[in-house]
Length: 290
Ligand SMILES: [Zn+2]
Ligand SMILES: [Zn+2]
Ligand SMILES: [Zn+2]
Ligand SMILES: [Zn+2]
Ligand SMILES: [Zn+2]
Ligand SMILES: [Zn+2]
Ligand SMILES: [Zn+2]
Ligand SMILES: [Zn+2]
View (cartoon, rainbow, N blue to C red):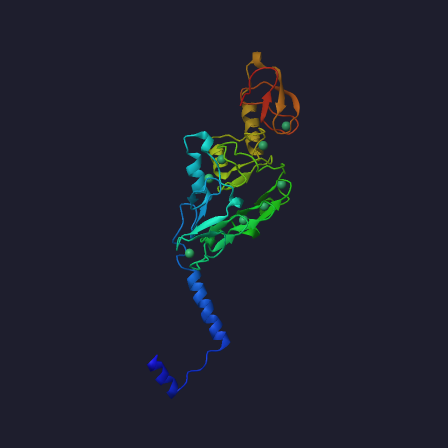
């Protein structure tokens, strides 16, 4: 203090301008807000806070941590899921102060997450996931807002390349994946929409295709353009005539176009005369040849 005073007498330092003062304060705030960034969290999210679950009054880093713990309880009556919008209190990961939901700690001033959604009470320091909140879905999603659109009929966000390019199924995503039975709408795993409009996890779909299953598990329609496969079957059937005693017609129902008709019996399959699909089943007699 004394030294400083002497110095001032010699040559007074320029008074800080408002601008400089302001920047200094910003720098200060920024560095305080950034304390611990990316250093706290769980296996699901990088965040500098924990949530007090309103349902059981316990503290968890995120709702997935809560749900994993609570769905594993031996007593089925105690199993439950956290309703994200109901969270009211959280605990700062840096200073441990419990407080009302906010973006910045009222005690130590850190940002609880670089991304913060007030509606979902959702925090994440990892912005590379490109989180955004969809008002129509009512939840936060990842992957960049510009890459998605909300289809009002399907009631969910889809990738922009599906705009005007998918069959709408009302509330298609408000269902469980037909393969693994997880609820799709707020699943953190990627989902895909099949030609029929039904949806499932991308990884479950890929697994299904690997097992040579090409029919939607929900409606049995072909999930891909199968015309090449049907052409190959045409050739194979042409080349392998059935023995005389099996040359009769059977009634069939087409899974793809829903029309009924008749086809000559063949062990390789029965072709729909309306849409050329072999994704058909015999009706009345016999079993499904596929
Ligand atoms: Zn709970
Ligand atoms: Zn704090
Ligand atoms: Zn949100
Ligand atoms: Zn949406
Ligand atoms: Zn749609
Ligand atoms: Zn699945
Ligand atoms: Zn389907
Ligand atoms: Zn057909």
